[in-house]
Image (cartoon, rainbow, N blue to C red; front, top):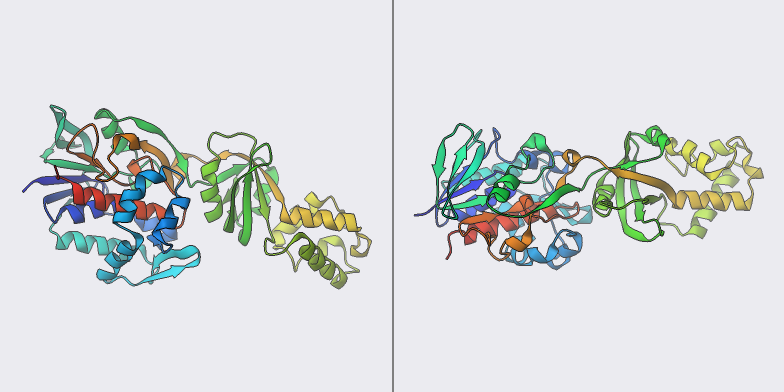
Length: 408
């Protein structure tokens, strides 16, 4: 029986080890004190494991090399992932945007399910074991050398070490170094799904404000929309974050002079919002302008919207002109911000870049350069938007690598 060594105990590594164990002896090596450390914090600790959309729709949400993933996602689908966790006794639920979570809202249930499956398959798990390098001989990997200099020999090797995001969880780019030393080209890692920094100084005044049911549009210097999405977002001391911002950050890379426009009332047309404001103005007709927007906007936003509207905050509502009111509508539906750039890669949820997909067989995850080397998960140059897609990619590529490992 051949020995398969899996490096990295995230979702890709755990799934690769579970499936490889059907045919081989498997050793799973993880440098942390426990498995699934990054999984533990995903989805704010609730673990958005996949998405319930039809698998054919997934590719619209994968900006990073979607075609490479056709084989793996169709071979091991989101339905397969949900069935796997159900078979391990984890009850699941589907939330807004078709995001799938454990019913308990505990990521530990997902990690426990993986751990139970590993145990049932007799996978040998080595925790607190950091791989220093791959041991290569005659263009073939023969073993791994640990930090303590111990060498573990094997016949086939699957690298599942993740990217460079959330380094505190162990994603420090080790696998990229291993791959590069083995002759692979590495597409420069960059942050994907990362908060956006803004130029506006007053953004600090909105820190902590969370918005729901808003529409974010990111535009280039020609005012062309590069990204548009409806959902939730959050203001921070440096700019904006939250689900629709993280996904939108993917289009910010390597571009200058970008703006972010927020429609605070996307459910209303311009004319409908104008009528709504007229109704509010009628209600507060003898009030100052600054006291007329409480029914319409969150308290923290009111001073900023007033400033951007160029209407004197002390002006009586009954003196506001039609032109001023329509300008206010425009400010609310086009709350414009200037993008400074992205936060650092160690704040990103996911890394874009990694082992070049041109050098990996998409139907087996096997290296095209070294016969007994495989890759799965975020270490590969693939990435998706938020919503459970990235974990599904990790699980699907892990499944393919584990199933195909050792096949001639």
